[in-house]
Image (cartoon, rainbow, N blue to C red; front, top):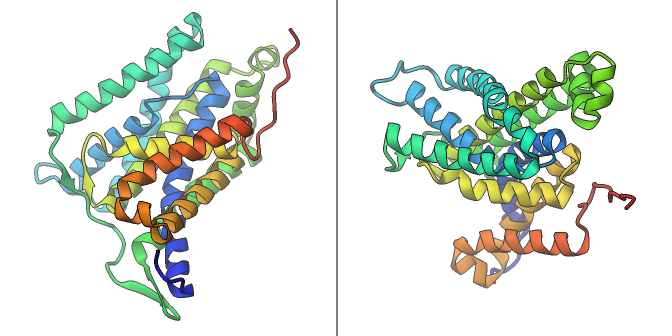
Length: 305
């Protein structure tokens, strides 16, 4: 175990907040889909992975158009939104007739499809994905903070804030919330539920793309499998905060990110092998499911039988 110093502690907290920001973006996407369909979209991470590959081609690939990072970022986010809406209309909506199990199987099929397509189109070898942020470091007292950490936190928080404001302050956002929570009642009120759910899937896909484009620079490499572990962390964060609570998912993601960062620094067996971070997240997930299945911000559902 490392000797405790406040400098090291705060550096690990900021690092954990950076990781938590990535988890928060993807966890929010998972919550949006769960509220709309009642299931977890197992393809959510690989949808973000595929979008990140498109960004890599647009920005870094020699045969691509060579866009600037932020132009490519905006374009891929928009493309992902459209793609998510199309996936709902073409794949998910027909499967809804078969119930929740059919949707789950469909999302697993999409997970495999996106992973296979990425490897086939761009080959499975890891690719460099450079950071869009300065390589210099920010000094606050004795604490040395990477601009990548700061940039990741700001981008992810900005996206989360836009989503919250959209749902709270816009008419379309209110209709999307109503369609996800009370579909039949919404139809009676004249809300086009199918369109609202398609927009929800599009928004979740856009968030997944942001998570992927922020995770890739943190990892430094890009391959068809890089978002699978991020999906596990995001799912654990969503369950920790409450799978039906957008605020809970974000808070849970930051708790998980900071917690794992501190454990990796101060607990010997995790420091020796960083691959144990994932089992720690799964252990947290198991504990939450056993003792508080509704999460920190979720509400227990009571059904009359």
